[in-house]
Length: 407
Image (cartoon, rainbow, N blue to C red; front, side):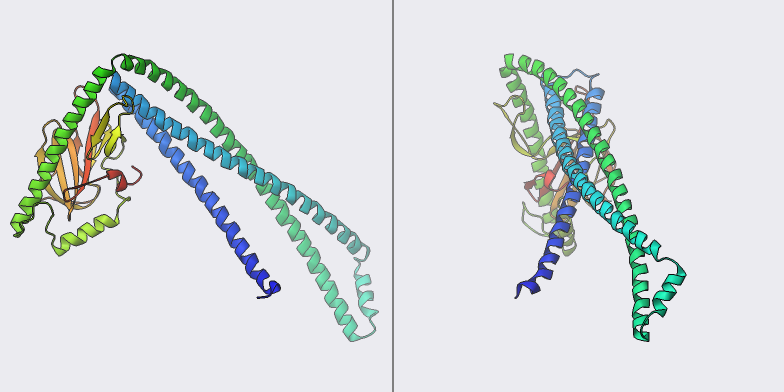
């Protein structure tokens, strides 16, 4: 293909590329702002939960864990805010360059328009225009002169309109620039306050960590004991699930003990549940994840590890647990060391809501997404209201963070 034939395609590709960059930048700004708001809300929630728990006797280890969670969230907030400020700096620079270019274009337009107005003024009289037409040698020349006069008038109007558009564009950019500068200044001020709070929390944490280091062996024993309690609870959940699968299969005539025998309706429900992976609502209306799924090093006593088959969510006192998806209540049972647990079956997927003080449903009930199913228990010793939430596929443990939106 010849170069001159390629030019229109290259121009189109360039425009599409620039458009995609602008769209990506806009999405990045929106995503960062959304993330900033989420982190600020999480910090507010952590502060609120810490304040409400101060009336209870808390161990040094628990206090350090809470502070560590707050510090990590605050560090993420500072990082996101810095990214926003950097994007704004780039946008401000881009707008400044645009304003400079527009001013030059506007000055040139005004200069051209001024010269045109002067020429027009010298020959503006109606008589001059008529004489200009009557002095034509023939009809064709008169017609051409008339067309020229119309084109000249249209050109004057076009120049005037263009000056108006450029002026409005310049005014809009100036307004936008001022707004961007205000937003950037607000972010900078917010970051200073956040950093100050972060430093204060770090100092408090260091004081507490020193006391932990002096008795690290004792705290390691505490963590080990806590892990044993978690393991015992998780083992009970596993046994309840296996027994529930075996019972359901026995009733349907199947001998399988580890995998649900699915009806066509149950298979469709399971497929629907799976298609919503990453989009399910939280099992409480508000809360903070205090323990994540799987094996992980303890954030403070790093010589020890902790393990969980699900997640633990600290929430408000008297908070309600709610179903993350529609299904049938397959079990409601007491769990030693964790109050009551509700299991909801979604085909061969199971969601478990553990550590409930009250339950609002019974075995066999059909529940809908978002329905309140029980009240989360509050610890009498720590004052914390914590939901243990798990997801299984048959007997396979799954990470709830992969299924719940923005967990």
